[in-house]
Structure formats: C-alpha cells, structure tokens
Length: 414
Figure 1 (cartoon, rainbow, N blue to C red):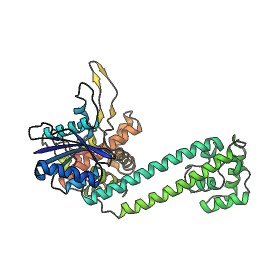
Figure 2: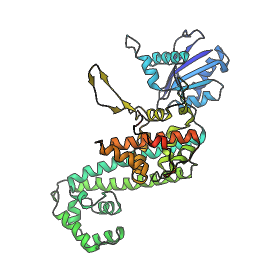
Figure 3: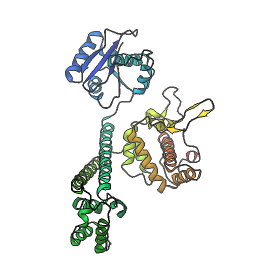
Figure 4: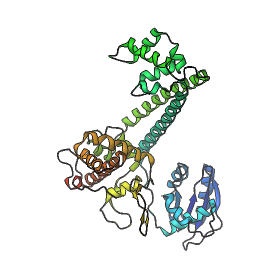
C-alpha cells in the first residue's frame, strides 16, 4: 500500500509518498494543477505500485482540490478528502514550528496512513450541481449586499435623510428615484411632474402629488443640499443602483435554475413546515449533502444524537471555554459552512412566525431573557432535531402530529 498526501495549492500541489511501513519515499515534490501535472504524478504512482493499492489524501482547500480529485478518482485509486482542521492539529505537533508546503504534504500523508479521521463523502452529480448553484446564489447575494452598503455610505454624504423617507430603501420607488435623482441637490431642483411620474409608475394607492411634494421638500431641507461633491457622488450612486439591478436579475436567474432542480429528501422534509419556502430547504440540503453520514457516530457507531452532529457540522454548537473557577461566555463555534448557518438562521426566523411548535420554542427562550438571535438558534436547533427524527423514522412532519418526544424536549441540543 502506497500512501499519498497532497497539499493543495492554486497553481501547483505538493505531494509526499509513504510506503507500507509509513516511511517517506524520496522527497516531497511539486506537481502542476494541470492534466500534464496529474499524468506525471500518475506515472510515478504506477511505477511504485498497482493503482488499486494507492491511498490518496488531500485537504478540501477551496475548490482547488477538485481537479486532481476528479482525475484520480477515475484511475482506481482510493482517494479521501480531509477536513483541514484535522491536518492542522497534526501540523501543530511540530515543536520547531516548521510550516512549508512539502512538510504539510508529509503530514497529510501521515494522517492518511494512521487513518484517524472521517473523510468527506463523495458528492453525486445532482447534489454537487445543486450545491454549485446555491453557492453561486450566496455569492451574488453577498455582492448585492456589499453594493447596497456602499450606496448607503454614499447617500450619507449627499442625502442622509433619504433612508427615513421609505420603509425599504431598496424597494422599486427609492431605487428609481436614485437612478434619476441621486442626490438631495438633484431632487430639490427636479420638476414636480417628473417626480410625480416616477411615483405613479412605482407605487399603488398613494396620493401621487402629495408624495412627490414630500420628497422634493425633504430634499430641499436636506443638510447636504449644497454638498461640494454631489455631482461625483451622484454618478457613483447611479452606477451602484444599476449594479443592484443587474445583481438582482442574476439572482433571479439562479433562483430559476435552483427551482428546476429536484429537491433532495431532506429538502422535501423541511418543505412540509409552513414558512420554510422552497429555496432555503434546497440550500440546506445542498450544504448537508447525504444525511446518511450523520446517522451514526463515526467513531463509536452509536445511532444517537444525529441532530448534534448536524448542528456541529453547521458550526452552530456551543463553544465552551473554562479553566478552574473561570468560565467564559458560550458562543457558537462557527466551524462549518457559513452559507449553511445563514440559511438555517433565515429559515428558523421564518418558521417561528408561522408554525406554532417552533413559535413556542422561540417565545419560551425570549421569555427567559434570550436575545432574538439566540432564540432563533434554539429554533433551528430544534428544527435539526425534528428533521433527524423524521429522516430516521421515515415519517412526515405535520403541525398536529409532530415528533412529540422531540418537541417536548425543552433543551437546545448542545
């Protein structure tokens, strides 16, 4: 058996090899992240052993590992993807503090040789496709949020009162106004009929003239009506508005692609809960992947506490720190996919407003003095507990007949 440890990089990977006794074969070498580089490593492995006797391990570093993983998966080698936290713990054992790519490749090979880890499961085609789409949507939403924050920052110099005029600064009317009149100076000097036309097109049931007059009056009374840079900032705001429009369009396009995907089993279970929607369950399902890997404890084989493993995977389990009589505050660990935690938070906040079982959990925690965000964490922790029970039992959630043994458990999984 040949053990191969690969330290993943963007343009090239460091590779170290161990023999059946755990001794290093030669020195670690670099191989380009190209077909030629992969073929060169494959040729070296063939010269040492039958490919069926080669065990490859690599860290899940960004998406840089996927090219080599997909290539060697087709060759018949056994290949494992390892959580970087596992290998980092082994690297920290070097008392001299050495940290190089080649040294990291040796450590990864040693971790694979010892086998004291849980490998990342292989993603099937549909699951991987759904995850790619949901990650793309998350990226676009983050970009859109960043642009909105930048736009608000610019508004604070040209028309700081603008936000107070609307419930939602980024609804259709405010964006249409900013595209045409991106500063207090521009809106204050606008013609009333032109402003009325924008208000009429983008609102319903309002007194158009009164609304237009209110907006112009607010602009004339703005502290920044005579801003020295209103022209330059106005152009920046116009560009930001157009960028928001473009990103919103891209998000809608990705939403349609996600909607066309068949919902995985866990998404179907979550969709039965009122308020969950159709998008967030798919995001959660894509991030968790195959729930079968969470059913049993990978170390003991015990089938209990599946919900705790789901909570830990999401990085939402309590991180406790104490020493002697001192005890620090508990925080969630945040060691897991950020997009998964966001989706769980959003769905938890939604279902607690619509489903009485989850509302009871939320209200109880708020009554106990918990902050809103903490109470929502308890809600989605309870959601994971219920989903775990439903997944293992094959049952379907209903408000009238939920999992009573789960709902009656008043403690959040820890």
